[in-house]
Length: 332
Image 1 (cartoon, rainbow, N blue to C red):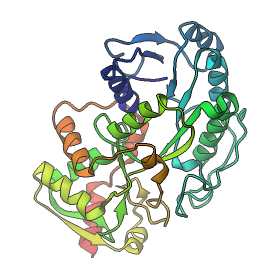
Image 2 (image 1 turned 180 degrees about the horizontal axis):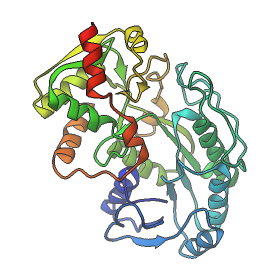
Image 3 (image 1 turned 135 degrees about the vertical axis):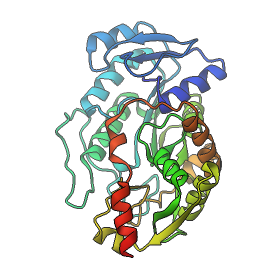
Image 4 (image 1 turned 60 degrees about the horizontal axis):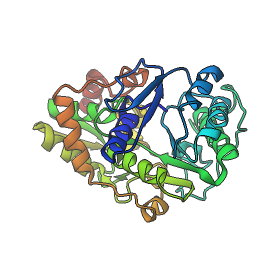
């Protein structure tokens, strides 16, 4: 479900490399269908289109990468329509489904937000401090929809932040461009704070492994070792050749200066649990994460070449304006 950009594209390429027979289902508007797939175009919220898709089964597994903007009831309709034609469903969800995210450290058994499987897009709310999020409620409902239909044959992948070639949000490309520009770089202290982004290729490989597995349930898909923020910025500077020097600023000062967490300085958030997501169950099931320096290197090669992400509204949210950054640095 999806299959033409970022994670979906990497999953398709990985499946074809394994010599699997692959069917992709999307609207045909974002990216090009890969050579070698059976490409079916349609709207996944249309029961008619879903019924037409089901006629092309039976599949060993469905891997759903395209439900992020859908209401739970739409996920439920798709899972129900395809259940007779698929043995297994691998659902790409998010760590936002947990009640405690991002305030508390999380494991795969942490409590989930409650959302009915047939909820519409209005269900849920965003808290006054930005958590929980309506998005988290909606994704929790999508998980419930899948498990109600597929039961033990459902796999729920809960990544935090995915980086890598083809990224459409713009977190890593922004930091790479900022590193290339050089000079004094506004950076969130503490420099030794570890972050857990995971490479899109590693998520794709794990999704494929789970499609072929007999296990089920939820998996946190986060980098088990991670990297310090210092190491992250040093790798960005090294890859881009930027002559920059991070200026590590106390979070209280950044907040006082009106810097938006998570967006104006991508990957920065002060909540205790945001980078404390345990992925040991996924690691035991075969998740392998390459060093994030490799992710940074490959992303820069893509971005500095002809990196062209799919147009997405979230791209414009990321990165602090140079004038605002300069003003804050001058005030220190």
